[in-house]
Length: 551
Image 1 (cartoon, helix red, strand yellow):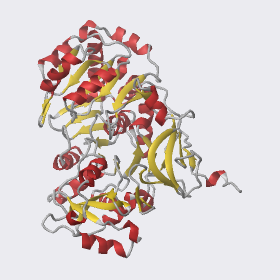
Image 2: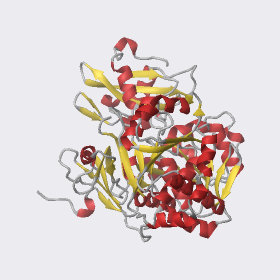
Image 3: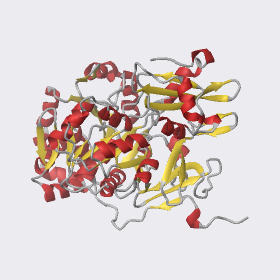
Image 4: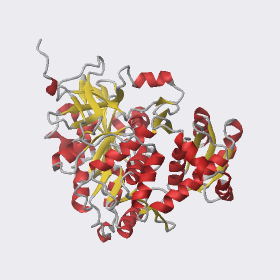
């Protein structure tokens, strides 16, 4: 049996002329402050507060000294449970400067979820918002605090307790802070991010300075960031998208971080871009859809935009085309990755043609390896074959916090990270993600990839957004359910219209046999659609008599 030539295998190594950074996050920030001290580093649109790099660096140092004065030692876990705000960013860099491990807590968590994270990570000091929307963070902390023995201090942003924390800073000198920084290695753990598990409690991906600083830097390099860029960051800071691809990409290039609001509001985002003359805009696909669908969208001046990142979930080709054409983002990039890989492994390039930008998740970043393997054997497949995407390199996490067995399930002996994603590596090295291994539908013995059907249905004139899942079926094992959000709620598509639209272009076994018309999808805070919830919601109600439902 002849073996494929090496260049025909689904393996790629990102070769780059720029070496990896050997800095800690604190030392890298020092470089930015020295080079760009009088340029803007951070803008909070809601409050109107602004920091130059010199001012930002000084406030980071004050908070770092305050944390040391409060007894935070190297390796201690400091939690932050807050919406996007300047204090979030200051905590991110201050903890890095003193070698504390920042535990980022999802703002949507409820009491039992917060209790789990605080105890699993052993958080000793927590910084938190006072409240947001329906969440009273102080009340939630009060409910669980007695059951969190490691937690000795809580400071609320905008509260006297926050002022008390800052007031402790003079007890620690600049020399003492410098001595602490001298003890730090770029390979030290610096961040624990909890993954949104679909079953059971989440796992804490543990990341180092080296992991996330380099990933933010090379994401920024790929879209040519300089000190002239102003990045609008509406994605949550608790997630890698915000704190790594946003904040660290900005500070490692001397660019400005613009916070449009505490959480995503489409009009506030476009207003921030216009007011602050942003050159880059981030978002998950549903965010861009919401912005484009604003009735007053055409009234915003978005002419300063040139680039941005769309990531977090599969990026529909039709949405990407509108972003390029209508939002002036000619150099917009798609990134692919996961929390456990800091997060980005592949990214489209600025000079990619429309097909590569809309049909792939790009190619491997510098200093990272990717391959597509047979999920059962681990053998690398020839290019063009669908299998599990795996990645290796500086970006792979140190492991799940205090869970070596769970780590071993996803990181093999060769340090390859199992992503759980089904992908195809094309002849040109670009990667197409065709779905999750768990999301693949097996209908009557045929493998069906939801992503293919979703991309096709985005072209239906009555469909604004769509998610395809498999639901149990007695005859075929699984049947295809299309959950759609209509462009006009008063005129939703019918199952017959969807089937007719598909009939000429898709094989018969790929045509949805069931349809649900929804007002919104169940989402995680990071912008991913909870497909498992769609499957579970409709698994017991998938009888032929109830094929269409409004929600």
